[in-house]
Image 1 (cartoon, rainbow, N blue to C red):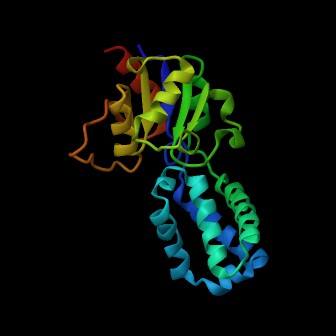
Image 2 (cartoon, helix red, strand yellow; image 1 turned 120 degrees about the vertical axis):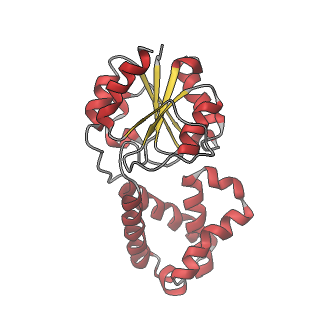
Length: 234
C-alpha cells in the first residue's frame, strides 16, 4: 500500500528550461547595470567557461546548484577585476536576482488540483536537484517534507535525497512511490532505495533501454490519479 508520494519539481510540475534562460538574461542585465566590468571584460565564451573552471577546483559543487551559481558569479566577478569583498557581495546580490526570476514558473495543467486531491489520501514530499522552492510558490501546504540536493549535499540519483524524504515522513521505501521526468535521476534513483516509480513523460519519449523500466508511465498529470488506482489495486 502506498503511503507516500514524492515528486520531482523541474519539468515534472512545471517546465524549467525557458524559465532558467529568462532568469539568466535578467541576471545578465542586472550585472550590466550593477557590475559593468563583468559584461565588459567577459565575453559570452568567457562566461560559459566559468562553470567548468569552478567545477574543476570543486567538483562536489555540481550537487549544490545554489552554491555553484554563487561560486560561478564570484569567480567571474574576480576575473572581471572586482576586489574579493566586492565580488562576494555582488555575487550574492546577483544570485538573489536570478533566484527570484527562476521562480517565475507556470505550473503544468492539473498540477495544483492534483496535489490538493492527492494530499487528502497520501503524504506528499518533494525531492529536487534544483533550487526552486515550493514555499516560494505557495505549494508547501501540500507537502509534509521538502528535500533538495542543495540541503542534503548530494543530488539524485544518489540515495540520500530519497532517504531524507522517507525518514522525515516516517514511511518505509516499499510504501512510497516517486514521480519524476528523468529516467536516471528519478526512476533509477527511486529504485535504488526500494521505492516504486512513475515516469512523467509528456513528450512521449522512448524509454532508454539500458535503464530498469519504471512501474508506470503517464503523459499528463491528470493521468496520475487513475494510474494510482489501478496500481494500488494490483
